[in-house]
Image (cartoon, rainbow, N blue to C red):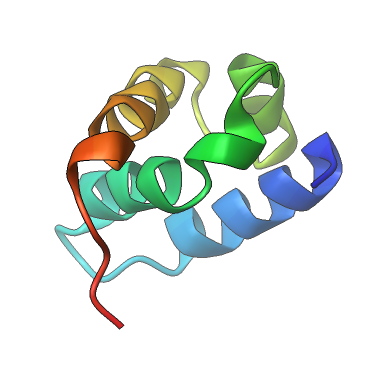
Length: 73
């Protein structure tokens, strides 16, 4: 998946997150796309998604959780 595609997906998840669920949606994005995010510039993804770069930390938290969780369908 390209950086622009990841940024578009992230922007959609971030900007459409339910009230008080933004950080959870960021973590879930990191979990769901952990493999595709490896080697990507996370700060660039945040920039393209029009999201503060500091949320890159939250994406990385999700990526680190990915091997330990299984998403429900």
